[in-house]
Length: 240
Length: 203
View 1 (tube, chains in turn cyan, green):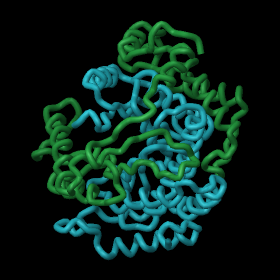
View 2 (view 1 turned 90 degrees about the vertical axis):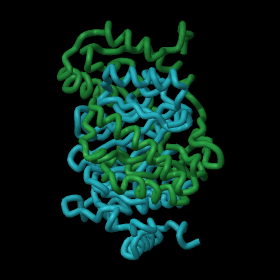
View 3 (view 1 turned 30 degrees about the vertical axis):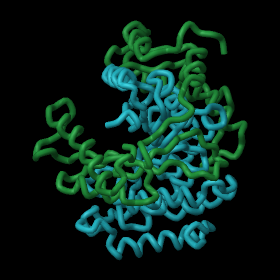
View 4 (view 1 turned 180 degrees about the vertical axis):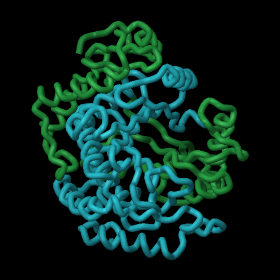
């Protein structure tokens, strides 16, 4: 690791810490490293509903800079029922917390990505795009992902999801906020009824030629299908 | 904001974790967190509409910011090892925000990115940190997986996955295998970035 890398230390849910994290933070500071403090507030957890979890998210984010003197904060509001960051409620918490902090401070914020659908599925790419649009249009500085299929299964992720995260962010940067909200409402509406039947997708080794490190044709076609949907919603990034 | 003696450090925080008010963890989780959040939701009259995922109303943004700030000062932070609450003054929190970095360099050389605060109106896209984000990776594919991420032109830095096993062992926390896994993780991501021709890339 170099000092210019992000050195991670985590807070605990909600507004809790352990002494080991403080010791780790002291080590990073003494070594002159950049410190990224991570925490994922839980919607439907100890805090409760939408507003209360957003208030806790703001408090937790501020604590990164008070307790740890962090360089940047990595967020990740997660839905208690689905274990994902792309559910409407999780996106709303992330969008509101980031805008609240962006309006009132110069603090630098990231967000992390956990989808319910797995790689090589349109649903996974649409979930990713929705969060990238939320994060970009709420003033976040860093997008970090994607842990597909909830990030719990071995090799269930590929660079194609990261490509979508990046392209969707570039597609909307500078867009009118109200237009982005209208688009997001439609986009989230396309997948939020399908959590119980979300496609599990395929692991990296079935999505990529592991010698040449390129995606298989099937995934390129799935990606194109997702682009077609996003273009139909009004994003012209891929048709310019 | 009033002047304070010195900015808070992690050592001050640790001292407070040893001397702050005692509390049961379950009281913290089940009473302090929900009740304090509700108190400031009510105080500021905060109401969110989940169809509007990003707030368009500055007043709502300000209310949420002040509610979060009040909550941090009022409740503090609970230390699970000492069973005590770490408290801050409002001025300490405001001073820490004021002192926080307003830029940093992520990565080195031609792969370096100068990260600065963005506005929601900004036409410059955020930094794209691509990778498995802590998901489990098999040992044999760890390096090629991360090389494939580094080869994506739109990816600016890497957020890596973790080893499912390391030399066949289970990298459980607080074991020798954990350290072997973490060190190997960093070495292999660096190697993956080099193989992609992006040796300065941040991690």
